[in-house]
View 1 (cartoon, rainbow, N blue to C red):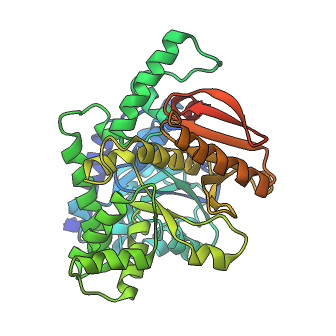
View 2: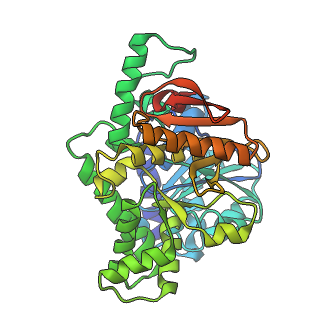
Length: 434
């Protein structure tokens, strides 16, 4: 008689194969798919990691690869809850029992949310011994698929970070292709500005792009699931109220500086009792779950980076709006948050800068030795705001011997000279697409 567990595995795999592979919105990030390497896709839940795997599967099918040579396992399937380290190998056995003709041929394995499978590291490492296999895995923890992969797979993995839709991807989802030539006609400009206003409100999570009615509840559900499943359950935490209070505080602070001391003082004012070590630990878990990022001061001295406050940025400005973070009309901080995320997508954000006189520049980006300074400011119409933003930029350009300075705004476009330095003012919708 066939083992019940094996029968269940075959059912899971058969169900997956019977589900049509969708044609999701094309992302601007792709899997390297190099021989002998595991593609490790990391990011917060619901940002589109599974979409990226589906895109790769669709490419394979369109190229003529039969579905019988593609194994796809979703480890959040409740039927796989009984999986243990010692029986992970039976997934592969069930696959070849269904498709004996694929044994020994080039195959592609896609494992979604693999952190739910205990002992997955050894299982994947063993699979890497088969040169006919291409393996891609996803997980909802930065530490899971960076620290653990680095130690377990010993340099045999390539990590791809997935964030919510960029503005370009959000346009593509709405069947609008970004311009390829600039400047654009006035009609195109008006359309892009309108779409940017929508993006500034909606954010980039794929599922909520077309659901204005339920967006807030869906995003709040994402936050709850991340807190409970990716932090509380994963790390067996007992102080969930403290964790939720820290998350709320961080989301309210998106675009502002914070420190452990400041955070602890705020929490103690709420009557909470805890040790500093608990705050440090929870901050690590929150970052590992990709809810927030903490940007350090840009400095050569490690001590300066450590002792100065860090700037808080959320995984998505739409999530901040939906979950009681910054006020919806706080366009400046929402704009700064999405500029940070775009720089992170480009792999170019190094830190923020404090000038000798104490003025702040939001971002130092670009390759080492060729810094590009960027301010994010919704509106430069007020004279004092304009002086503050441009003056900080000019001073920092002098200090860092930098020739590139940009102010990203909601709608202003010009090239100006301030304190002997030339800088570009560019609308966000254009900066995001160029």
